[in-house]
Amino acid sequence: MRIAITSMTIAAATAVGTAALAEDVSYTVDDETFTGYWAEAESPKGLVLIMHDWDGMTDYERERANMLADMGYNAFALDMFGDSTPTETMDHRRAATGALYEDRERMRTLIKAGVDEALSRSSVEQMVVAGYCFGGAVALEMARSDMADTASGYATFHGGLTTPEGQSWGGDEPPLLVLHGGADTSIKMEDVATLATELEAAGTTYTIEVFSGAPHAFTVFGSDSYQERADVASWDAFNSFLSAQLPG
Image (cartoon, rainbow, N blue to C red; front, side, top):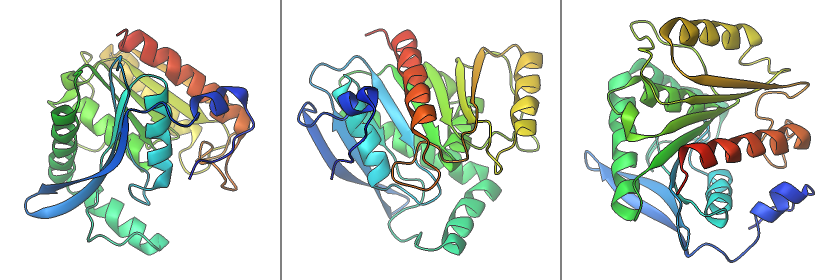
């Protein structure tokens, strides 16, 4: 179901009927079933890989993938949890995300599986990765990994920003775009400053945009945290980033 948004920018992006194909996709990793979502543009300018929030691959990621297909990009929302992982309660979500935060090798294995599934379906290979909340941390994990150059850029929306112990930024990563709410009490401005310091020291190309008064999860349609002004501004910034990194 499409979600009605009052902004002309977002409403135009969610126009119905321009995706050539949109469907759930099942794939397996080590005999475990995962469900992603594929949205295909008619004449794709590039590919966008979407990393989901801590509640798993939901209608929210489907909606964002549809928006991207309407804008002329193939989009794949991968699944980091698998069909057998419960996500109904906050305890479930803490367990699912915590398990991956503690096992970065598995996190990277699941990222690689999603990348492979997306590339197997896409007629274009040039890719940008975007992550929301937990998915932002996943996107940055990929950016620090040996998969980094698979993508032309990485974007996070109110995403986790902490660099785990034992990892660092090398300076040769593709450009990063960090979109953050100034009123985020889950991922604080201190985390933004720490990341900026790390990236600056490494020489990594990055842009950070902070939206005043925007809480954590400010892009989540229909939620108490949704802030239209920050959602529109961050989506516009992301659109510009896509145009630069996926020129078609």
